[in-house]
Structures are given as structure tokens and as C-alpha cells.
Image (cartoon, rainbow, N blue to C red):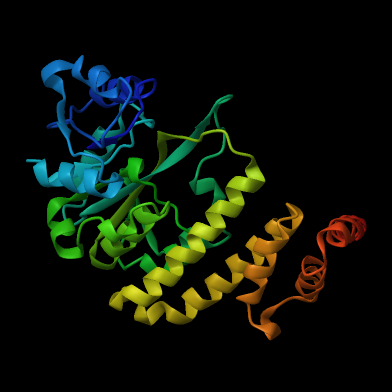
Length: 319
């Protein structure tokens, strides 16, 4: 199931990767979210192999929900309109499901695809030390199976991306579809995934069989935006997910950790207003000494704050 908005130059590659699967999808559904370029015409060229519907301009959450509601198959695999599946992705999901019939949620490893090509490292390579051990994974030839809920671990680090997920429609009926109130939030898919994990018997495919396209932002800018999205998501989950109550202490720690990291990145970027805002949300005693110094520098008038920032960064580099 593919949500689509103005991806004329990329959606053809995505559909080709979906249609060349060694195990063919039962159906391929594309939901157009009000494209104004030639995206619809590009999809239409695939003819009856693809079901194309229009959902107006309601946002990616509504598009995904419309596609899931239309799907006749008992399982759904998501793919964004610029991402790519390796030919054996669906086959590997099916093999894992066959080996573990109780599994109702599968996520996979992936690489990032940038303008200069496919990255060498994978998402799973970035896991914090001991992460997979804490999940209690059970390794099978077909993949990893998690016999207990792993939602708590994903608050520390979230290895799941929509284009590398497949799940049963029954699981969605229990956990709920994408939240339409989160339109415009970049991390809305993470919120959806966590709700699935509360209810799911989850499994993972460690081979990187999906390519997630990353568009041209600087690494530091991308990291800062990601941290801010994660802080928002963790706070939203704490406030709105009853099933997250056992994890509140962990969520609070993760919010503080990410906020400090975000404040440091904002300071390096000399975005002093954002740095002050982030530092203010961290309790006084939770702030490292250097963060107190950065808060003082960020509060200075601009003509003074910039050279003071440069000096503090140079001193940090020498240590």
C-alpha cells in the first residue's frame, strides 16, 4: 500500500520494485493525496497491476488509512512512494510468518538511499550497545522473533520505518489506524508503530531488504529535526497512550536525554533561541555543567553570543 503525493520522478521506481517481488503481492494499492504533478499519470501507466484511488488532499495518515481499508488481503505491507524493496522482501516476510504463525507484525532492516548511492551501514547497525539483547530476540533462520512486548525498548531507540513493515489487518483493528489528528507531524508513523507493538507478536528480518530514500538535508540539521520529532512523539505517547504507563519513567529519561542532545546541536548551529527553549525544558539539576554555560551564552545579545559561542566550541574541541 503506497501513499502518493507529487512523486512523479520517483514513484515509477518504487512501483517497479514492488511489482518485481519474487513473491507477488496479492494487490498493489496507491492512494493519491492530491498530487498536482504527473504522479497519477505515471501510476496509471502500470494499468490493472496497480489499483489507483484518489483521497483528496487529506494528508499521509488519511491516505494510508484509506488504502488499508480498501485492501482485501489479510496482511498489509506499507511502502512510501520514493522507497524501494529488494526482490525478496515479501517472500522473506511470508517465510517468517509461515515459520511463526502467531506473528502479526514484521519489521525489517534497511539502508538509506541518498543522492550519492546506497549507504553501506544498515539501520540495525546503529542500535545502541546491548539493544537487541534486551529485546530478548529468538533467532530463527527466517528472522528474529520477540516473545515479549518490545514497545518499551523502542522508546530508547526506534528501528522501525513504514516502508519496512508488514502487519495483519486484525492487528490494526485492535490497535487502531493512523491518527488523523497528527497531520503534519513527521513522526506520526512512529506513534502508529508503538500502538501496534503494544498489541503485537512482533518479529524482525535482519537482512537489509528495503532502501529508504533520504533527501538533501545536512546531517546536523537532519539529526536536530529528528530529535525534536522524537521528543514530541515521546511526550505525545506519554500523554495519550494508556498502555505506556509502565514506561513513564523510561520515557521521561529519554525525553531529557534527547532534549540535551538537541540543545547541544542547536547551540553548535548557533540557533540560540531554540537552544534556550530546549534547555529551559530540562530541570536545573539534570543539566550538565556545559549546558548551563551554553544557556548563559545563548541568552547574550546576538553580537556577543556568536563570538562567545565560537570560543566555547573551540575550548571544547581542545579538551
